[in-house]
Length: 430
Image: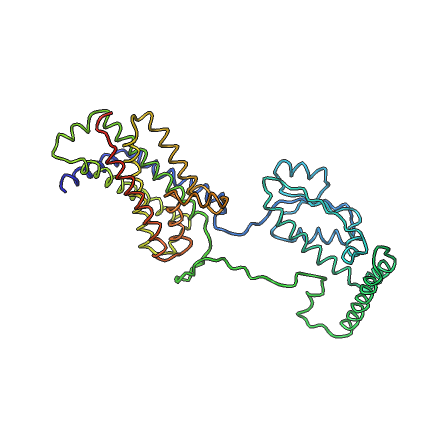
């Protein structure tokens, strides 16, 4: 035991004596995690200020009211202009969509609701790289049109006009024409009754035409926080988990290359001359690698907690267990690479490729739920997927200690497998 502790102490002194390497192993994941966190939403606020363009070819009262409604919505950043001016901006990526309101919109939209007129066609140009914004624009456009068309449609003058259009429509069956006529009569009667009765003050805003027949109360599905602090998804939490996993795993590759260099220089032959077993020598590397990875990971998360709003909403004991399990996995992975590698030059490229594949499949760069379903299932065979999911569970998801047990068991199982293969396959000479 004394020899093992001496070997571990020597490895720690050797690693932390290189201050530049230690600094880079901490600064690099922090900077890249900060970039990805800001890129994918930062504090998790809803999208706002989506840049869109609007071209009004109709110039009617209806189309102008629709344009005004789109401009007033905080979700959009609306720019009004000609189609030939705005379409190049969409192609250049400066606007995410362009709405073209056609001629005749104000005249046709109301009658189209009852099938008495041809439906006007609104053109939506959109940036294919921002296709997710199309649904937002389409929804807001539908809401604005429904309200403004409803406001104009159910006025007495317009109802009378629509009645005449229905009476003269040739493509309507007699039964449908009679049904629409009765509907117009009923609406006119209801409008007359409503006009003769005093409307309550709270109904003033309801007189603005049709609107969605419901309201929504949007609540983020996150764990309740007993500390009564504002709880919201923070994309920095996932970014620091992913980048921490990536760079800690990279440190395992550095550990492997260091072992191969020691073997090339004959240092392992000298150590074998001492009364030390194979398990003691390789075990000291595992312990030292685990401690180094744990210290670096802890510092990275300390910065995330202090400066990027990442919070430990789940179990603190579970969080520590996850860090410890992945640090041990990293050390065993480095030992496995050293055992299977023949030379440092040949091993470096293959080890980095294997690390990047594990990082990508583990959802370290982008969340795993973005993957296709088959790839999500496949990624469960990669230990990094369990590490990232467990760190998410202990931070922004606010899960209990039990949620860390299965991921840690999987990581410890991989660690045991890596260590067993490494001890079996390790060669003392190059």
